[in-house]
Amino acid sequence: MNKSRLSLFVLALAAIFGASFGAREFRAQNAPAVVPPLPSAQPQIAPDILPRQASPVAPAPVAGAVAHRATAIPDRIILSFQTNPARSQAVTWRTDASVSAAVAQIALASAYPKFVETARTVEAQTSPLQSDLGLAHYHSVNFAGLAPSTLYAYRVGDGTNWSEWIHFRTASEGAEPFSFIYFGDAQNEIKSLWSRAIRAAYSDAPRARFMIHAGDLIDSANTDAQWGEWANAGGWVNSMIPSIVVPGNHEYGQNAGGIKRLSRHWRPMFAMPENGPRGLEETCYFVDYQGVRFIALNTEEQQREQAVWLEGVLQNNPHKWTILTFHRPMYSSAAGRDNVALRNLWMPIFDKYRVDLVLQGHDHTYARSKNLRAGVNVKNDQSGTVYVVSVSGPKMYDVKRQPWMARAAENTQLYQVVSIDGNTLRYQARTVTGELYDAFDLVKKSQGVNRLVERVPASSERLRPAKAAAPTSR
Ligand SMILES: [Fe+2]
Ligand SMILES: [Fe+2]
Image 1 (cartoon, rainbow, N blue to C red):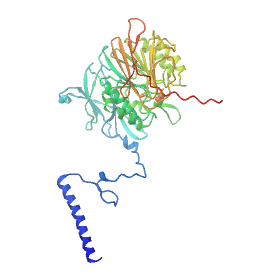
Image 2: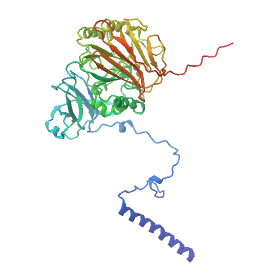
Image 3: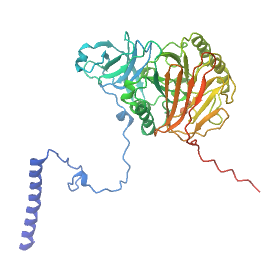
């Protein structure tokens, strides 16, 4: 290197070090941010000015065991009814296996934050659950001795790691106006696409007293990540508004011997009533809520035992309104999915006791009947029960158009809000984008059947374009 080149080199070095020192000085004076060194020997460039380059390898998905890992902090907090909703409130939640002495606290809710000093503590029941992602503990408390129509605050934890304080309101003892939300199958792409259904429903009806899920909440009965997505989609809504859940065929998996079994997540995750037939605890039950008897049936097993039990529950029903929910519909809205045997078994009982409304899932379409005359599959404005099939998740089937359908839809995620006030039941189905899609009122008459008042909006039905006819040979 000759002399002039050497001096140019020294000058260049001085410029580089000077600039570098200057930058460090500037950061020290003006900002706490430290740009972490890049792992490679590449020149150090702040990440926000890294040139965008097509990566030859797609980013790896975060493993389910990481994305859905339990910690000592409670998650999957879900309210439900285990006993009288006017006097009690059940809650379940999840932690990691380090928490074995879980507790919940409850107090009358007050705007004065020192209400927390009046809280009483209740010990939880804890059960371990070994899922495909690992071991977790599920905890359950049924707050008892509550006052009707009262706002409470509660939290769950282990004495150190707590949830936030969360409000819920108990039911009144007698008939009072209220609303609830009903969802058909969530099932697929729960985080990605079902979350908007539950969030839209909550935004539309934030005072709803509970949410009915008519089965197929998830797709794969024992896949923990799907239950995690379901719990996260509702998030804190699930901890404020109780859920009434019934299992669908997708809540059933097979055990090692090939026997059909209820998801092992079901009973730890939900605390439903145990007032149904033996062997169907927390999957077949009834809840009385402010003048309405809600009956949940399990279409997946012991259908005959449920028919006997149902007759007793309807015979001794002191309430003005009766609403049923279960998964496989009495009248299928899709092709090739008719449930003739189940309909012949259960529907005569619905007719005999004049069930008002039946909320179902399974067919991944929307279809709503007029009030059907006893056992007759035709439109009839004079008598009978209103049947609904709905879908809230993104999996979509074809509608098989039938005479009983007053309104139908394909390719549409929906939620429903039902309000009951004295002699009037008001039903609205909305798309997840908030448009009113279907509506009717049922009005109780002193004797006989309900009067059905159609309130279908003027918009046309959302149906797939007719399929092109198959080419005919000439
Ligand atoms: Fe299903
Ligand atoms: Fe389904």
